[in-house]
Structures are given as structure tokens and as C-alpha cells.
Length: 146
Image (cartoon, rainbow, N blue to C red; front, top):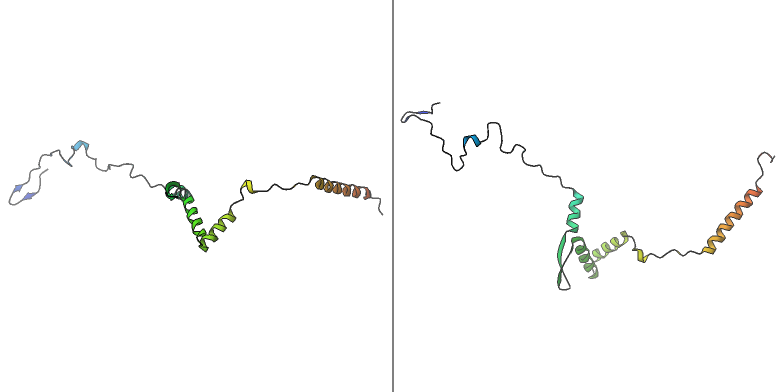
């Protein structure tokens, strides 16, 4: 194959291929129709909202507490900040803390065991049994009552 013909130079001869920087050997170059990354770029994984929220809330943060830097989950640091604002007189923070307290169940150590009066329960059950026996005795057998 002949190169382009220029009037003032004559026919252009092909230059020998020189291997070097940004010029790999011909046998190592990509073949026509073949890319350098056949599988392509990996697809981005979809973000799971709940795991992202959990990660943000429970990620450790450094907080100054009593003059010392301590590490605690972000949610705990936010609740301490909210508590301090409520104690400082912020009405909005007070309402939020009240709502949070209402949502959570009472701790097990604060629950009072129910007061059981066994004699009262036994008397009640005896009264129910006596009534059911009276009803059975006063019942007329089927077909006899007129």
C-alpha cells in the first residue's frame, strides 16, 4: 500500500513501526472489535436506605465529655446533646425528649409485679362454680316443660 502522494515530495513511503512509549508491539495491541475491558466497569451497587441510616446513626464519633474526649455512637451523642438542650430550657428539645420517653417501654426493673390476692381469686372462682352448679340443677330436662 502506497502512502499519499504530495506534489512537492513525491510518494510517501510507510515508516517502519517503532516500539516505544505509548506504542506497544503490534501483536499486543487490541484486535479490531475488541475492547481493553471486555466485562466493562462494574455496576454501582444500589444503596440500601436502612443500612445507610444504621451506619450513620451507629458510627462512632469523638465527643468531649467532662473535659475528656470519648468515642460513642452518633445516636448517643445526639441524644446527649438533645438532653443538654432540654435541661438548658429549650422547649422544643423538652417536647422531643418527652416524646422519646413515651415511645420506649418501661425498663424491667421499674415494672411493678401485679399484686395477687390468692384468697380473693379463690373466693371468686368458688362463686362462679356455685352459680354454674345452681344453673345445672334448675335446668329442666328437654321435653318435660309444657
